[in-house]
Length: 202
Length: 391
Image 1 (cartoon, each protein chain N blue to C red):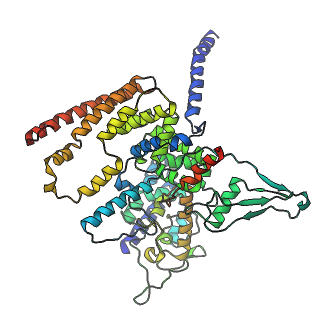
Image 2 (spheres, one colour):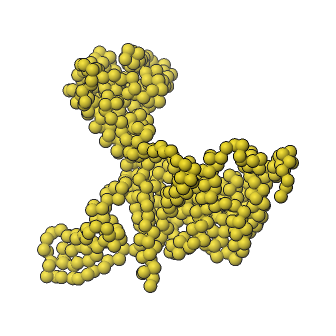
Image 3 (tube, rainbow over the protein chains, first blue to last red):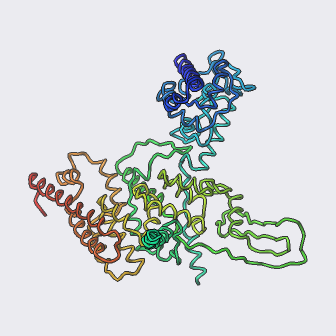
């Protein structure tokens, strides 16, 4: 948990640092700084302004982050340092009283635009993970390689709200053909297609 | 001014060429349709045999691990006799999984009125659909009739019939709406660019009936895209390879597939493809003899798969030196004679006016010939070294 939190914290500080650079330096330097910023963090101008707020309050989740940013984030070095080669949910552990975890996860981690819990679920804790049907790299982390189904929240630890959004996004992505799956085999009854032709000829 | 006029003159032939190019592109662009009913030619026994043989039977590909809800495996102890039986069953199962989707004409939707009852006019402000939901009827036999608002009773159009069938007897995997993958052209193009051909075709077979316009349009689009990207190996040993080969042979664009087959050393399949195109276009070239000769020399895909299954039973010491040489080189003496025969036939095709990409094909044949020669020398050398008598 600790290295993860540290990773997220370091990305956030990087975001704020970069945004400050872009805010306070001359335009010529800004041009040079931008590609580097793009490689490292998904921070953009619009988030740059909001980054100040989120720096002051890391639990604030009012800003809407576009999917494109999230897709770029998943390819970035910042993501790599935070999660490594593992899935987003592998390092996550639920907090619970006693030996056994409650059967269902919590209803939601975010209430009134703010994280309302000390241990938010893997999707809610990182605001740059956006569940959307176009974000296939993220969705694929939640699909079982054996059965092709969406992994249960008891395994991934997602809150109920995130899990619902995840299932919807996966279904949409399948509908669009962005995620492939094994289509049920259709057995043809040839006589239905060929036999009838002969009848109509006769 | 003069210069401008000169330029225009220069441009004129180019523009003409552009036009020609555009028409050609339009031809190759998706809407290749079967101009007459392809069904009698497709269901012909000889064509079916050719297509099945071309498809091949790679057990690993047919029985690949599927990501479906239930993909449990069973482990059993068996005697050799039982295992033998199981092998035969496996081949049968594989053949079933390779069943080709039917290739039929587009079915025109005709309106068939049963009775006109003007007395019933305005009985309601919406149509009524009546469906016979008795158990065990085939989808095409199921009676669906519509009572229109103006009182006419008629058989339902194909679209309604399909929807009603799906409503009462749902087909696994079919959606009641058109998936966005098929309705949105960009999404389909994206799927094709990522080479998800098998997925698209699998979904197509489930979503549409083979006699529907969409089925023809989309499959034509997939096949033309595949012809350009030349990733034929993705469909080899799937149920879509047969219709694909048939499509190319029908539209006279087999050269790319032929090139791929020669490059991968599937010469027998190449001969079959040429024979198929001769058969479809009724070219007066005698191909039956070569085919029957080759057939005698080479095992069918099913036999080959069975051989592969059985070979894991044998101990390495039992196999004998001949088999070992075969395993090292990948060819037997019979294969070499078959190759010679098929190469002759292929060269004859390349020399004729039917081949379009002659240079490419000739080069491929040449390289293959050199490779084969090397293999033959190695084969002979190995045989001599091991003291196996030439039969």
